[in-house]
Image (cartoon, rainbow, N blue to C red):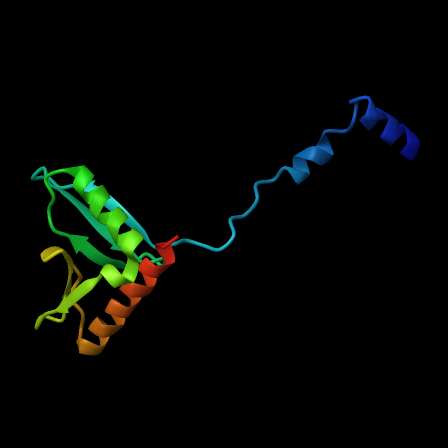
Length: 132
């Protein structure tokens, strides 16, 4: 019956059950990546968050009046990458992201200076994964 199977397939009468098993969705290679998420606050301003691949929030932006401005900023950060980052640590074990002399975003507070430095490194690494 192998001949009959080949003949059926040749004329379009093949067994479609074999296609169903081979058409299973392919798993994504790799895993999650770092990402920006923008949202609207209750006061009408727009903000973005930057998350590491594991879901840790690394930055929360200051308010923007226009959602397009967020898109421009995030595209610029991705395009210019870690070289564009100016990170300033403060005395509250927190850091801020500055671009063109403007503070754009702040990090969460960290327990100590060592945790703060580690978070700044994770931010740089996460942003580097987004560069094309």
